[in-house]
Image 1: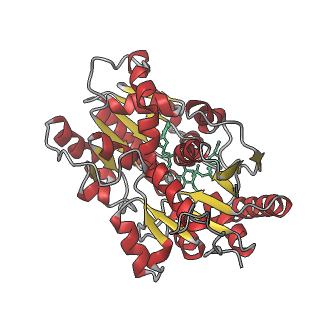
Image 2 (image 1 turned 180 degrees about the horizontal axis):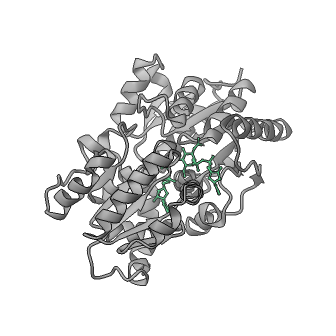
Image 3 (image 1 turned 45 degrees about the vertical axis):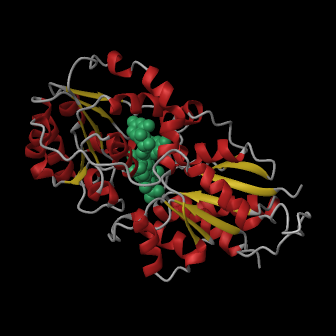
Amino acid sequence: MQQLKIDLIAAARPNFMKIAPLFHELNKQPWCKLRLVHTGQHYDKNMSDAFFHDLGLPKPDLHLGVGSGSHAEQTANVMLAYEAACVADRPDLIVVVGDVNSTVACSLVGSKLHITVAHLEAGLRSRDRCMPEEINRLVTDAIADILWTPSPDGDENLAAEGVPAEKITRVGNIMIDSYELMRDRIEARSTRQELGLADTEYGVVTLHRPSNVDEPAKLTELVAQLKSIATRVPLVFPVHPRTRKNLETFHLWTELVDAPGLQVIEPLGYVDFMNLVCGARLIITDSGGVQEETTYLGIPCLTLRTTTERPITVTEGTNRLVGTAELGETVDCILAGQWARGRKPDLWDGHAAARVAADIRQRLLPPLHDETGCAAQPRQQAMGNA
Ligand code: UD1
Ligand code: UDP
């Protein structure tokens, strides 16, 4: 049987939850051969290995070990290493996910080598080009051959940018697949109890956007707000390494750690983090993925940003964009029970990976049988490979 060689690209924390369901689905298919590539953009144990373990992913076939750096350094280092890997062993299809620097770097490599590139989580737009991720999304979607979108706004954004409809397939939200795959283990975990939060209302905080954590004045204001809120509802804050580095540099770390009602902890693995989220009264975040998970779970989410590339979490879900100054009063609304319940968006159902697999099969492999029931000849590849 003809086998497609598929590279799955993983790089940073949110990628692992997008790659894992796809890996497990494609690994069952006799028509493809997978190569799991980790670019090494995230490398701390609790930003990388913990997720491979939690999500049942094997050791990557290829680890590019690029690490941190400026945008240009990181993007260029991924390109150099991944181009060499593709030249040494050329895949038929490269699957990139999300919007991190490694996503755009690997898309550029594939595109220039005329390898078919597919983008999972295509079409999301914040329309804020100060976000590095927005540039990554625009470039990746402009050059990818196959665009898998999570929601109708993705299709609309791509159409408005002139992407031909035949390149787009709406597959739903892959993050929800990870949650459903792990649901039993998430429910069985005792993270809430271990943090002393089993019988109480509490909030969870995650922050890592440069717009929130890279400026001393902004981060100082946020720390003051969190300290004040923690006197009314206990907060748990697993701190991202970028944020920790800045809290220490701006001399805010001790103040945060000593604040009454606030538990400052290391970043959590996926299963522990979701156990914590599932029991929370509210979430305060600037994460992309957490906006989606809270909408799926019906948990109030306050997003500390002026825009979101995931507007469906606001229009249909439980998410609201808030400024730092209004954070405290908005938390009080939630504690008083004033919050929309929201609904689960269509195709956020745990079956996105199966739809992706079916789409790959349909687009890139010959049909199993022609109309007479005879085995069909391989059809010419429609995309990418010039
Ligand atoms: C990156 C992504 C962002 C994503 C986030 C998920 C880009 C441009 N940004 O942001 O879209 O939302 O990941 O978490 O791709 N660091 C460590 N250990 C690690 C990783 C990072 O200490 O394992 C520290 C380093 O000091 C590094 C800094 O965090 O310089 C930032 O890491 P980087 O991957 O460049 O960006 P993130 O802020 O993590
Ligand atoms: N997450 C986690 N542990 C944490 C914080 C977040 O497992 O301590 C998970 C979260 O459930 C979601 C993903 O990480 O699935 C989101 O990643 P992140 O916020 O780093 O990136 P973004 O989605 O903003 O790109």
